[in-house]
Image (tube, rainbow, N blue to C red; front, side):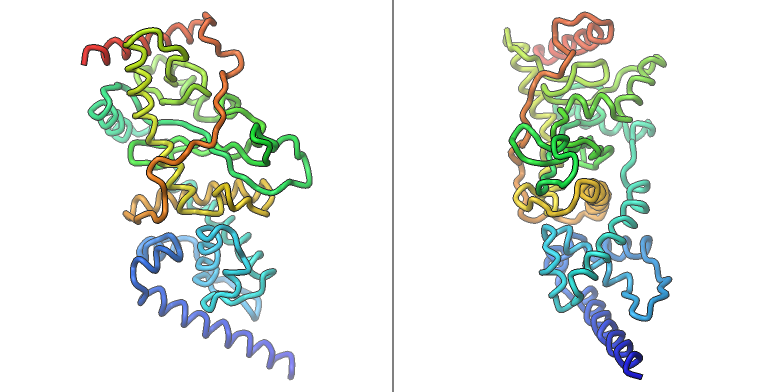
Length: 355
């Protein structure tokens, strides 16, 4: 009898929490709602609808709406579970909250990432729109996106520490981000530790393999922009390492302005989902950080689709990378792809000098 009384009381508490949360979601001011959950009300309802799983067998089953609220607060608030667990809307024990976040974030990654992180190069219309935007704004033809890396920091791991020890003497993942002109994330790779250089992450990425395959199939005329940490390739244009004349200097300046879109994208992405910020130095393990990064990338794109404003984000964030020449990609090398890439870059440099 006492057992059933406890179960009844727990369920009663969850029902009260559910009602309280439901009222807050539909009655809170827009700015207050976005600040708390990082999504607009419409975006929140969309995510809830496509990820909710109402099949609960336990007598103390926690409704999907509470699970999503708790997870978004952890992602947006920087991973402080004890603060979320003590919140009046999601009042659960820290151990329970940890399980909720783990289950929900995996569901978000599995459901949202295939829908919202799409390699839009396959779509000629999307690629053409991006090319037109970059050409009108910066007079660089053929650009379908920009690539950059960003470090996702965490506390010292218990295994394979050397893989995650980066050049700044801290532990991190080196996540590669590719975005379009609207700051939509088209590709993300957070599988490599902080010791890996940007060029290594790019070399082993599916995106590079895709570009190489279509280039070998005689489909040319589009490329990404990357900084000097990446190799110069026919599908990836980087700045000149030395500015020996005015035309090279101008190319590098225009290239940097155009490439700034990916730096702003990373600033908005990490500023909105503060669990990825450097100062948080998450206590989660690297594998879970990678899942967070993927799910947050999909949520980032959803926010863009639903025109959700971002809060407390620097417009031009400081880049946390240390750029070094990519191994084996010296400008003195004379392989055929490098020669083609140099010719493409030189042609663009010449056209920019005439403007």
